[in-house]
Image 1 (cartoon, rainbow, N blue to C red):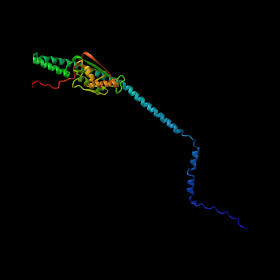
Image 2: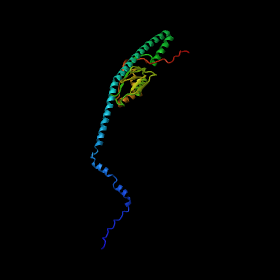
Image 3: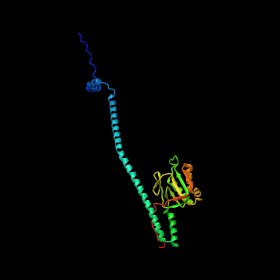
Image 4: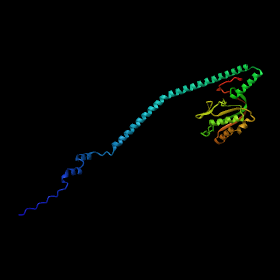
Length: 279
């Protein structure tokens, strides 16, 4: 009796001794985790979107709160700022009134000084000659007001004044120098007497004469020979400068001949030094 043939044993894997490692590589996630993941409901990223909306809402509320606080502070500060503004305007007006009073006092004292000078010089020939010399010097220095015939020049910015159509300090300087060249004996701008010590400058957008800000239009009075003053001014470099502004930048200008003008004294003039003649 023959024995049944036995099945040959399956060939042994060469990595049979590494079965644990093979199992870890084939199943890297534990079955329990896989089951839990399959049972978790799908939420399609909704929690992230909800959090984003909540953050935007909170940010908007914070911004609105800050704006409300800033508006409340500005509202509370407005009355105080208006109060300070009114106090400043009052102080400026008081200073202007005081300045006007001091200038009136100065004029009265100057008249008193001239009266005493005339009494001191006497009425003889020497005294009369000295008085005439003194009068000429006071006229030249702007120490006394002057009346007489002359020309009146009024200049203003262009009607639609942009940067190029606005008068500058150099334009007013050129105009005044043209009048001096034409033979003017006394000149004033908006009531301010011009002398050798007068400064015409700019301060921001304003033109200042002796550091006093002026506003257009600018009225320039020049006392002199009405027969030649206007024509000679038109031929001067200053007159041609102003005419160039009129022709190219629409600056406005009028010039008229007047029979009687009043050019005031320089209220800011001061005696710097004196010398006794003959010493």
